Image 1 (cartoon, one colour):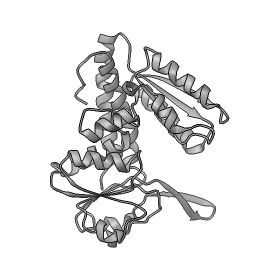
Image 2 (cartoon, one colour; image 1 turned 135 degrees about the vertical axis):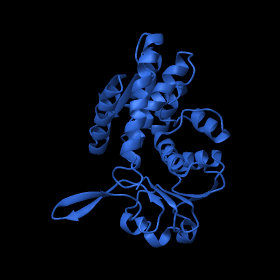
Image 3 (cartoon, one colour; image 1 turned 90 degrees about the horizontal axis):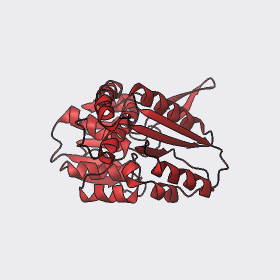
Amino acid sequence: MIDGRARAAELRAAVAAAVPGFASVAHRPPGLAVVLVGEDGPSAVYVRSKERATAEAGMSGFVHRLPADVSQADLLALVARLNAAPDVDGILVQLPLPPQVNPHAVIEAIDPAKDIDGFHPLNAGRLALGEPALTPCTPLGCLILLRERLGDLAGRHAVVVGRSNIVGKPMAQLLLAESCTVTVAHSRTRDLPALTRAADILVAAVGRPEMIRGADVKPGACVIDVGINRVDAGGGKSRLVGDVHFDSAAAVAGAITPVPGGVGPMTIAVLLRNTLHAAHARAGLPAPAV
């Protein structure tokens, strides 16, 4: 079992320990601004978790809650104000956005130096080129778990199931940078089980409950389950499951992340880490060793 909660707690503690050093030089703590549009249930819960984590790390948190019918122009105006705010080092606009707002326009409006989600085309391009960049939080969290479990990743065959801009594509880029041999699979892939059974590292990020079974996993493989799906548990109750059928895959894999308690906690921890790095870069300070 790969304990994401424990590793995330270590990373959050390291970030918190580095905050006073930055504040002593910059005369302020790092600042994170989060924008929530509407009251989507999971998004609202996630934003509250970010608020708590930001405060616990000793950072300044600025949460902007906008109505679901906000216009794109008003949202872009808020992003412009946050870009100009000297006490804001990181900007995160919570996705998904309502249909009247083009998410690409919003992402591209964020100052790349404050784009702690790593979604701006400039950061995505730098990642693809192997240049230093703010990196999407979930893929970087996955990479941290993989490095800790496996050490050197060079030469391993990694299969990433999913090609989203948020997880699949940046995950593939990070694994390529680690000198893995990388295969990206998706909904049009033929004979997916044949690919997953060849993977030393299997990253599942498709949003389909328990799609990957134990028979689809190579014995001894390291399985990173990014999926978070709510399914019916009977009796009017629900439960969270990943994209991997945990029990059958755990019987075969050498290591596996659970859902919940695996990748999810790492995402928020890396968000804080990215904010700390963005704050140092904006202040002209060397990158912290976190």
